[in-house]
Structures are given as structure tokens and as C-alpha cells.
Length: 180
Image (cartoon, rainbow, N blue to C red; front, side, top):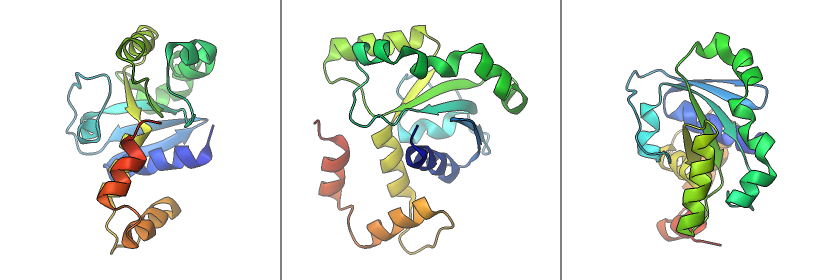
């Protein structure tokens, strides 16, 4: 588990109006704005994050890997730890019921059949949604005002980089969305 990645995802949810607490290697989030509604898409885009009511989030910061079926099978127990009964027992006092199980992952395969197979496996195993790491990062960068000061070290670093134009439109798009 990457503490830095967990912190980035935590700040993403906080800046979008969620109460966030950490329980072991998971984030527990609860929407404070009461705007939640069902999200039909499996992959949540940054504009739809505000519709999540409450969730347990597992951050898988394996930035050099795409979540292909073979990667999912190889790391099966670690990926799907979020769906285990023992995890429910740890968080039930915080979430009660009707919470989503969401993975934050670096990316899915670009090959459509592999992508669909990966999504199918995750759904079958009980994952409600995923958020891609580039979505989290771009969502944070968009929400940061380079003229404000932030209490969070993570947000301050992003603010400074944004102030000095390290996130120009072209660089930003290339950095986050160009296939490697």
C-alpha cells in the first residue's frame, strides 16, 4: 500500500465534500451534501463522484500495471480483500449498511475484450464501482485554486505546481491520458 496514493485519494474525497476516515488500509467515505443517487456506470468519472452516498475505498496504487484479467487473477486476494466479511465487521459501525465497495486503480487495458473481462471479474466478485487514478488526480488539480493556501501538504504541493504552470492543458492531458 502506498501512503502517498492513499493520501491523494483521501484529499480527492475531502475536496468533493465527503467525511473521510481511514480504517487500516481502507478509506471510509460519507457524502455530506446529500446529493447521492444511483450511478449506473461501473467506472465513476469525477463529475459523478458527488453522487456516492457512502463507501469503503480500496486504493491499489500499482501505477505500472493495467488491471488485466491476468493481473487480477495474480493479485486476487489483495484486490478483493474489500469484499471479505472480516472487512465488513471492521467498518460496520462506521457505515451501517448500503455502502459501495469501490476500488481506485491505475488503469484498465485498452483492448476492449480484456477491459470487459476485467470489469466482469470485478463485478462478479462484488466490486460496485472503480475510479481510475488519473480521474482522482485530474479532479484534484481542477479543484485547487492556486491563490488559496491549503492545510494539507498534498494539496499545497499541487497548488504550488499549478501556480507555476506545471499543469498546462497539453502537458496535463498527455500526462494523464496518453497510453504507455
